[in-house]
Length: 360
Ligand code: MRU
Image 1 (spheres, protein in one colour):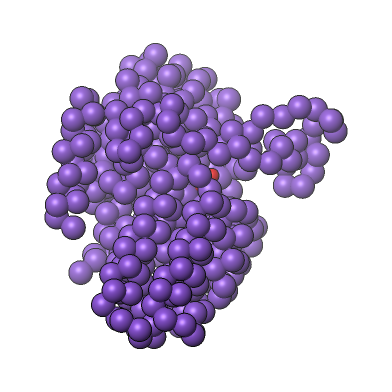
Image 2 (cartoon, rainbow, N blue to C red; image 1 turned 60 degrees about the vertical axis):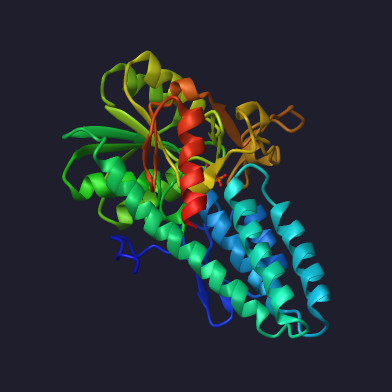
């Protein structure tokens, strides 16, 4: 039984054979829902960031694969499996850094494999098996975020001023959020005096999404540009930083939205804790360190334009890595649904993931 979360924001919902997505590219101006019925439209929605944030990508990918499965109405189990695997390849290729996408697709593919072996010839029950697994992923994510919130709130000092970057909130998960789960829980306990959030160039997930979802829930936040973080940290106005993660390597290095590393270095220089809040599904033991994490390079127009308006001369060279790596030395602790992990990350993350796998 999943306990109720304190926010009603739900970016992805399965409704009568289709997926209802909150279009995050339209926020905060308009609250528009998309009705997704084809897995290729889901792949497109992921590419264009209509749905984004590592855990939400896992849930979106899983439901996307269910759409692909339910569109297969003829053929035997091996043909079913081949079509589902092809759709999984397309969905997986949409965004390379957030590991939750591939992790969720792999979970569904294991169910499809087993189902195909058991169903011997009858494919009609297989989509339902995949749907049940996708629902489990979404429910586990929400329950996990509530647990992350509980563990993380204990680390937030009474009367603290907290800085977050990008959007690791309800919008980036199935509900409640990871970093914003910590903020929500600490806020509910009356621990937080002030929240600061960066605008998060180039795509403004902080300004558009974090500010929107916090205000929706009555949590006031102070929006700053990314380049103001040092100013406020230097003035002693920030007591701790909490961010999400797209992938955590075996040694504790963290891939997260571009600009995270800068804030981590500032936090270390000024002796304030830098926390990463993420579910264990974001930990990827197959990559030894941050160097091995693929970093998504996105379109130059995201840098040369703001919401369609050119802010740079045509022809300028552009670099647009969507994520950066924060070496584990800068990470005070990783807050997971199973508890708080500190150095030495290598052995503690391995043990934690081993326990989760053994329990599942
Ligand atoms: O490019 P985005 O918007 O998908 O990037 C999102 C982030 O970097 C988040 O901080 C991360 O996915 C954690 S979400 C709980």
